Length: 428
Image 1 (cartoon, rainbow, N blue to C red):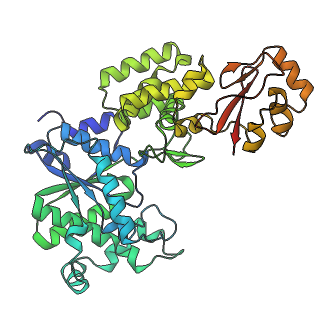
Image 2: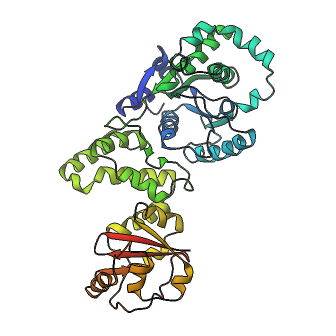
Image 3: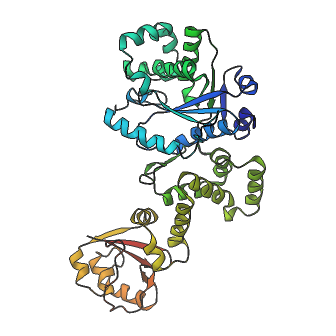
């Protein structure tokens, strides 16, 4: 055994609850445990990341992790934490999502051939040929309606409405645990604290069908210090897929956490040890303005989810608006990163025909851009002559210079007015 898994979660502030006997089971022998991930999108998001890292800690402490991709449960819809019925996805979309989720999970866990190498399973494999009458005989008869109705995920939805489909979700998830217990010697299911009801339904089904003993452990749902949901931005979820959330935006999310949040999240979202984290907290406290905690967290998790190259690109991109940079630096950015960097910057669209006639830079920055950048030619000319205007990070000195600039990605110009005012010109 390489360490105490429960102690590891406890000092990191991740442990929420566990069934009696769970810690004793884990201390007695290497144990197989699982966490389920429903493929409701073609990417996991950072809300899932705490669960993924729970499996990583589980494996590093000498146990065998199973990552279950819910190809079947994804077709049903988990009512836990939901205030309304979820739209059901087509089987084709779910199969695509499954493959995407699998490839993301493979980045974190060791799927080696050793005795405790991680496994990935899909509950669609054992549910696809499970007939309805068999299910209600073999599973439904062991769990009473009273037992199911007592679950918070059901009670909270009774007034607003809960379909039979979502009502039965806990039976389907419970059967997953029974199946893995029977076929993979899996004795532990883990998940977020909102999954407690579904998990203990599985332990109850195992007890009633086999008279066996299984265990449950839940982790704390991650929230910010101000009580708001972690992992959400104005644009929605922070995704693990670079196509949905660019590595730059991903890096910036962690970099912009408050000091209090960073001190908590570095324990949850990195594998750094207690001493190293305490040293970072102490160092940060001496000079909070340097944001050492946020930087250490952002760098570690960006490399883990994306790559070292993506981290370096994100750091370079960060200097575009907030540090010294050149036209060459700007041209190095791919279009997705460029737009992520400039998110929130005022934008103005001009016709390509207007740009191609090569007006003076004064006309471009006033009349042609509809007064968004400068309200008049006179003001534009005055600031250009004063050295306060740049296009694509190159300073403009002549108000009569032609607008023969090379477009970024054959479409964009970045205008800078003074030190901090940026504008993106979209040439269509």
